[in-house]
Amino acid sequence: MADLLPDGAHFVKAFGTLGADALGSAANRPSGRAVLFYATDDDAAAETVERLIRVAGFDPVKAGGIEAAGRLELMRGDLHQNGGLGGRLLNADEARASL
Image 1 (tube, one colour):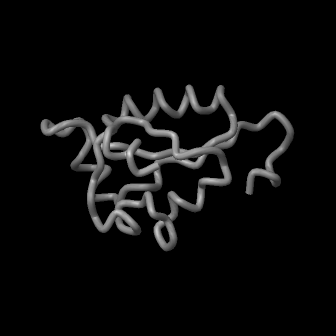
Image 2: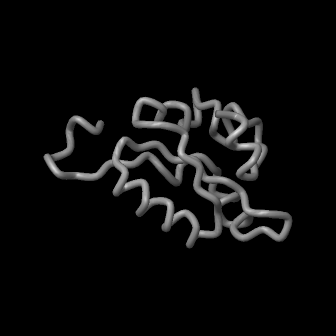
């Protein structure tokens, strides 16, 4: 996908590791912030997406470069809430330990 973008475009895989219900109910949860994973090879894009994730009420955790994007997908992703995480929401310490 990244190869299809025009020169100078910034590419990040983000906001896809939680189900819609969790995105709506887990933001700024009182028991501690849940994590949203993202993947990118672009440092400028990483800074921007991390700000967006924090504003949305979650903690950002980089899963790796674009080669790690598959880990964030529902059907095969070990870092997707309804995939490999079996419905669990992770905090930042748990998320970093899973990488």
